[in-house]
Image 1 (tube, helix red, strand yellow):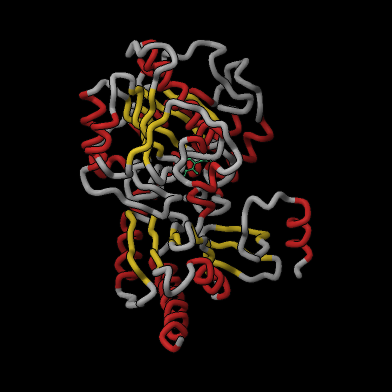
Image 2: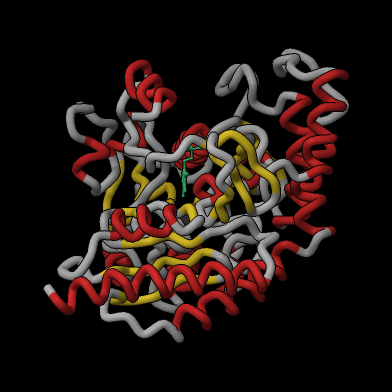
Length: 405
Ligand SMILES: *Cc1c(COP(=O)(O)O)cnc(C)c1O
């Protein structure tokens, strides 16, 4: 057994089940292990590394700002936060933002904002505010957030949970209409469900949800922590249906693959429910994060990574469709956010990921049946060709085994 793996297993809580590879370096779409083997990263840290590993412009901005001024807390103004949030608001069409660090904190911020808006603006009776969420949702791991998960494992042993959430089937506008009540503050939704296995809702769902929210004076809040910033081939996944949410949550790629950077964005009338002391974060909006975040947004636009995601994603999906394997149940996704659903009776997604790793491709299964393909958005056509060849080979060798029993 590899000593490094043993050490981590001995001292780190076993809340993950990593593939048996020890990574030591990353550059662009590639990472290297401790034996010098090179891999194509088709995981990008759950889409946090959309810009690629160690993007030179991002590393430079990180280094310069780290030496200049890194952490101040928001007890003071800094010269970096305003420009970062201005850029984020202008790009997404939002008016104000509240900076946090991890995705879950930004989701918590959205929940707090929605409830406070419900009481202050919509006049929902005290402690009656409801937030509607979807089956299969993934919004993070805090006790409040897992409390409205439909996934037994995310909840098991963590109760009691925060009340005030209602679950509806994902993609079901009629169920949303039924669930909305005068006490509904918000509908919180992922435009495409990532952790559920790259689940794309029926066309028109998000648009209908937006209409229902407007009609019932409820906020539509899109969690674009994973789908946002170009991952699905648009800057925001809700643009696929020309939807403009009342609240937007960004994270992951916002940190340029270098730092945890997240934010909740909204209109002025939603964000103004917060007053000094209502909510906060020691690290949220620090000048180091703001500098890297701003540069991450600039690189995304200047290097046309959103357009690349659309083009390369379509190319990858098209190539995957040309693989004829009985192990594939379905292919789905938008942009470079693609899931290969594996027939659970024929193979395990975990084994496919292990075999892909042996051939130099890193991915990770989600829910035992889906192989996620979400490489950095800087991936080239040639790199996609290389990857698809290997995916085809792995499916063929496993298919042969299934066929012969
Ligand atoms: C990853 C993710 C989160 C949680 O982000 P963390 O940074 O892990 O807290 C929330 N929502 C969605 C849609 C995500 O993909």
